[in-house]
Length: 384
Image (cartoon, rainbow, N blue to C red; front, side):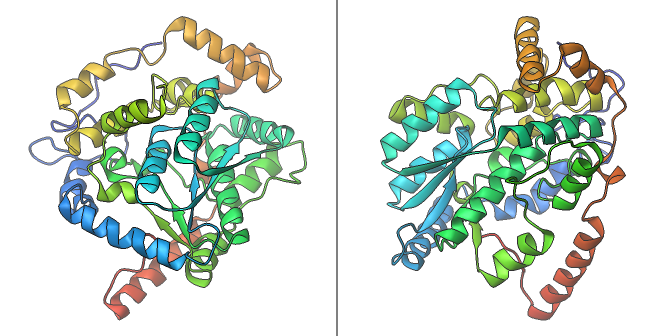
């Protein structure tokens, strides 16, 4: 399968984002709003230098001190992907005592299982693997395919964070270590996304299309996610990679050398479904090539050049044999024929807003946040 051509699309002259993002804008020199936002806002929160090292040391010392009387001082969700895997090495280097949690939603690749085992063995961390109820996951996944929305990874993503917060609460852990980072994820087209934490959206889609009662799949309410966890329970997401000179190449090299980590060949190869969804479903149904924002982020952080990114985009999203194998696997695991899966993918796409969602609540919350920030004279954020 080939990616779309740039023909008839305006492409940023600095990065590789294009008008497949319907909200993109360009200045007189053809530089897009994502690049401008990086320069004016995002880069101010990024410290890949000595200052970042100093800040990270202070931050992680606080994590250790606050958790010194607990069995664990923080919690880390380990998917087997590059970001969370490298974070495990960072936590070991700083002598933290994380509870490491892996959520198995039924889509793990064999390589992911191997990599997770190697990482926890090397770091000598305690791993808890929570295996989701497959019948519920399957029913939710089919519901999302029938709903025709863009983000088909909501099911796994929400389960991951929901489980992580449940374990943090149970073990009185305040700090949730997060692999989000500016170096590789600074470009994030809002028109392509809706938060995976929107439980209202999840429940409405399942109500319309689901067949199985959700007995064990636990969601996080809007109130809990934005108010209770961060401000009542004082739980703080921490993003250490924003204080390091982080890059995919650096992380991969370190993981290979120290734990014998085996690379997946493409981003999110740790999940069979995510691989299929990002490299086939999204480009075909919504004309969204997720490589663009990832590569644009790496250009802005200086990891790669624009020419290298364009070269990567010129390559097929999928080789035909690999696509055939993955489509067969996904269809079989979901209990449908390949033709039924093809029908669902070919059906008209729908925005998440066609279903009930938390947008009105979020808008009110952001208004309150602005008032508080103006009154307090400082940022009100749940991140450290």
